[in-house]
Image (cartoon, rainbow, N blue to C red; front, side, top):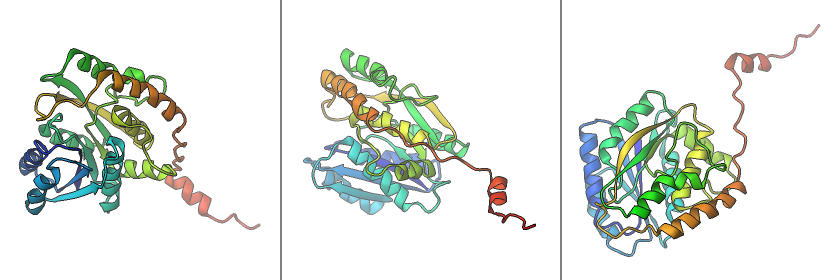
Length: 265
């Protein structure tokens, strides 16, 4: 099962069309899938747009009564995927945006990478379409704001919001935290998510995918200087919430030997 997790806040112009595009992708790439959309307290017609799609697609709509922010929306979705699976070593969750920034045609490539053994695959964004020069600069250099705090081997674009996770790695990362998985928000939350889950992944990969900023049907919410300040502020929160040590894997033969009682002489 592939759980496609889509956080949404006031995305009525695009979220329905995105769901239909995903359906078309999976029609040509036959895999069992479930759509999970989190309506994060939207004040537009998002709820009304989603209602008819829930009747004809494998769609579950989750809701926050009030807006809680991107990180809370992502965590609610991923926790639900972990709750639903009964095969965490086979099943996976894909995270993508509701505004068409992420290309649904990339979904089969992400799934194939997991089928080939990867536990996490991040779709690094190649920006296309309308975006201001300051926005492009910040999007390209955002990972530098977290350098020295967050490191994900094999991934350069650690703030991308488009990725796939094998659910066993995600489940183990969630279990490792006493409270919430994510303490940062916005772009920094994506970096934190990869940072925390990669500790429980055997293989982390990246691929390149187009990231569009001209199809969203609404003005951009990125305020460049505020976003830069938020990335810098996230450093302190992430330093104060380190990753617990990963459990040590004991080879099966050694585990069996340790279970045997000592010989009595």
